Image 1 (cartoon, protein in one colour):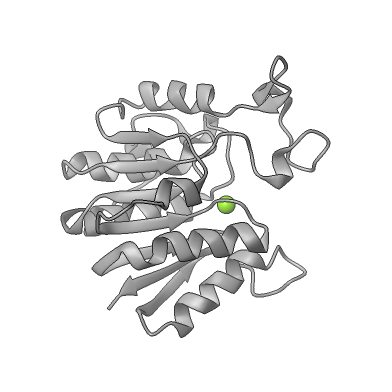
Image 2 (image 1 turned 45 degrees about the horizontal axis):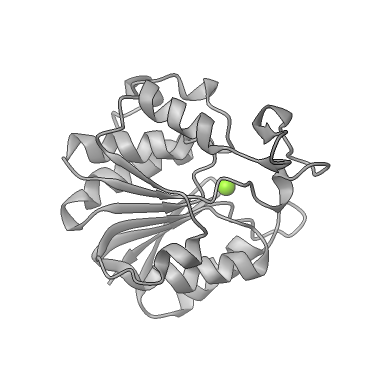
Length: 208
Ligand code: MG
């Protein structure tokens, strides 16, 4: 694998977010390899760290990324919670707002011609969706309800040969929350996907 984060148009280490280098590089490779099958879609963009990896790959292939996020933060980002970042809190609205930072990063990374932000809840965005997707990356809310809703909304839209990626897979419950792992197991048991090797905590499947 010749691609590294150094090939990206921005310094990803300076972008707020929760994605390891090897996971980002695996997202880039998956997006590059599936761009010919249809657009890429991610659920849970936050400040755009993963979007930069996906976007850079899709830009190379003249494809696009739909980046879905309500930009109000997940459960763990809310005021008083473990991963709250006060820089991303809108004092006037008294709500999280990661969209401003997301837009700044997309502009800085020259990805405004490739990334289509959808500022809405994932389930709402999926209501009338019918476009087959080359790749789906699920990294939204980590409650069981949120993860299940994302899986049900999007897994069925992956084209044959396309990739389903799910972030934060922790088979050991002492290492992390179990909701992403629950939908990972659903995907594995569905008969729709071939399991690919997991990269760090990034679960990967190919649609068969
Ligand atoms: Mg994540």
